[in-house]
Image (cartoon, rainbow, N blue to C red; front, side, top):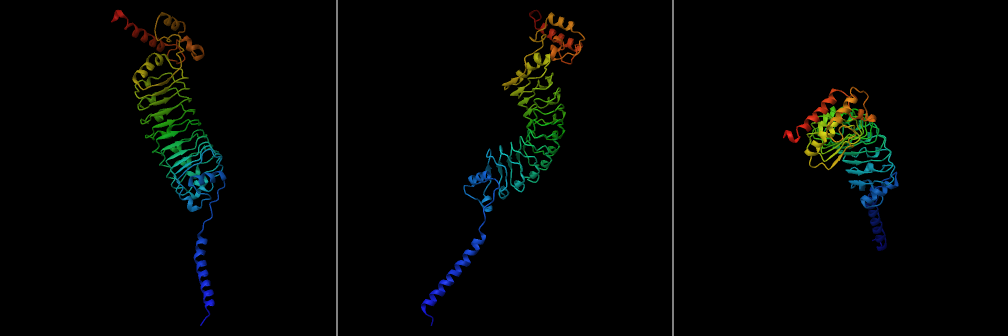
Length: 365
């Protein structure tokens, strides 16, 4: 029979062995924390999760991250946030989106005001619905061509000169592509669901490609090279239309709009019918219009929208004049339609106003 003390020692040994066997697997399964290349990104993630030094498993709980204006340079570490749906990292110094390339649940990305030069890492994130990359250097947006779930895209001030990649993004509702060297709007011609299109400060001169975008509510075309706005005449749902800084003379295409709330026409060489007829109609037809801008009528003949013999005298004085421009008040105002010459069209316009006014005199009523 063994001594009691030997049995006790053996029992303790067995107990310790069992404890070791139980603890060892747990130790082997323990995860190392995620290594973040940027300490500021780590701070943002830790704040969002409410824990320090998150592990890859912890990162699976991260669905929304707002890390704007935190001087972040590198997104390394976010590749573990596989359930991330909403990422806001605007106003940082980020140079690459590569760490988020595999985040297949991402729906919202705001990376405005960074140092990005490529959107290639986004090419396969088909879940994306909202992308903002304003004020970066991503001149080539071809990698976005297959993101057919996109509803909102803002590529302002990126040096984009070709909108072809958006041609197939038929779910787009809002497209902001202003302050880019864009000349051709053909790629957006089939985006019939667009409600917002902003192309201010581009190089657009032909609006025919957007004539069929009848769902548009907001259209920004400030400071382009536009002279003919006839293609806009069927966009009757527009509530906001910005056209300043172009070469528009004739605004008759807007005279039947009824939903306008904001219309900006300043810095355009509007002609006499624009001032004396169509602006009056536009105001009358759009009761909700509370933001209307245009320059004071510079035309000496039609300034008061009233026709008298002095006006005919100025027309006669400048008859057949050429090179009528804003620098010479369009030949003392005689070039009423601003086609750079004083001709029969101008005489016809003046006669129309004179006859219309004469028909309203008391002796004709």
